Length: 275
Ligand code: KIV
Image 1 (spheres, rainbow, N blue to C red):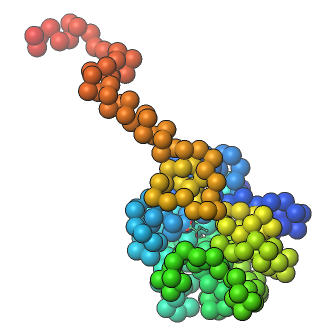
Image 2 (cartoon, rainbow, N blue to C red):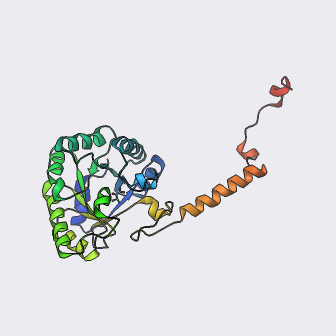
Image 3 (tube, helix red, strand yellow):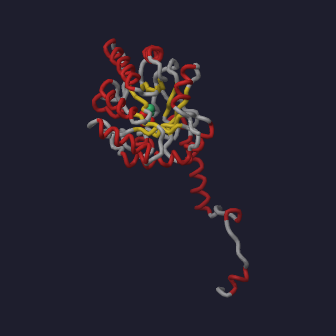
């Protein structure tokens, strides 16, 4: 049985920190799941860290469904949250509902995430009414990066802080089960976490959030274009991979790979006729 939204909400009530991590493929999701991470986000960040785009904006529903299916196959316990791509929920409530349903029905996710607060509340309400758990996402919302003018801290002015609290409350009121706070000053994120009853999941929002989410490539050090300030590198996988691949390259060139250990033998007599 997979983790449920009631268990996630219960963790906030008990003061138990919630861990969420992104995954985009079967093998990684399997590792993340076996560790016991309760929430796996198939984020549209895959557009940048897997597909090499500069922003998540080019990511489509088909791409997201393809990766979400792989993650669902890899993870047996975690709740899988599918990230709704740019312009798949903005046009109208019906489009939002139809595309949210595809994550559940076609890809096998248990919940969806979408960006925005007050402006998407009506869509959140309708999706939740139809039985699909929704995670909100406010603060820095990468799908609006062109409007925001870059990857910047959000909510620093009094007006912006008030707006962010209202966005969080609108999502809670619309029935979202949790909300991501991205690149938000820590004191504001702490205050929002205290003011709403649903869990806040921070990324660059300080330790006062109810949980944390990170892009897995950032914490493993496998994405080298840039390291966001909010990411701690627990490993340097790009270096590990580079060393291993160099060794492979050198051994193939030198004829020292493969050895007998990686080769298959056959009875000499079977070859006799050919010789
Ligand atoms: O796409 C993503 O990975 C996200 C997280 C950064 C929250 O939205």
